[in-house]
Length: 139
Ligand SMILES: [Zn+2]
Ligand SMILES: [Zn+2]
Image (cartoon, rainbow, N blue to C red):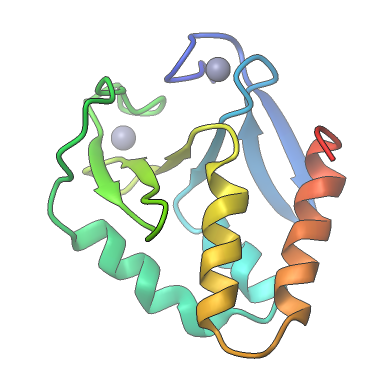
């Protein structure tokens, strides 16, 4: 699959039966529809799935970021605001193919979501452990 940001070839990363496409050049991550839910489930965060459904239905964000094309259907994706302080702008396929995170955005969003989930710190730690294991990059 081709990276929607920098057009490099992405690699498929598989971990705990969850597959995602990762760009080693710009560190962006593509989740096929369903894979992000699997990730949340595996970390015990399935209560946050409605939040993801809301994201898909939310209105387009005003952003200076360049529009990106879905790596699957090649149509322009919709920009949505997924996080607060700082706002995280994600690209989502209008046909539901999946969701694109720029490098670092996924870890930011997971941190914010896990924070909202309450005092449970374990799921957050699990997801960060997952990310670290998958990407073995910074930190
Ligand atoms: Zn890239
Ligand atoms: Zn698409």
